Image 1: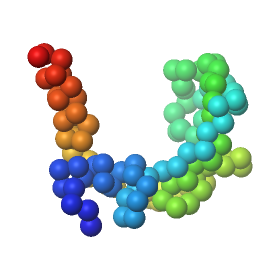
Image 2 (image 1 turned 180 degrees about the vertical axis):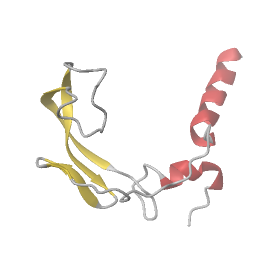
Image 3 (image 1 turned 45 degrees about the vertical axis):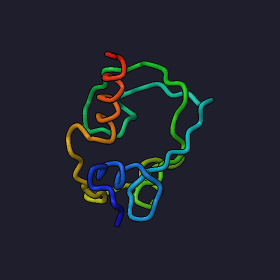
Length: 106
């Protein structure tokens, strides 16, 4: 596969490349939506952002090569995802944070 065992999360998640798993979101920055527990896709019966107006909303979401969200709504089924192990404190992200902090101390 890729020679990136130190950066496993980077190589498998969020990268548009063969063997990786990236979701693609088509975003409409002009659209608005009001948050409501009655219309969200969660099983929860409340939302702490109830009544908040959002500016910019996803129009399409492509996950696993399939359209997961479009103008008709959500198109997923239980079990359609895939678990990708992600180590805590990924070297790809936190290694850069550590390097930045060391430069700041000098």
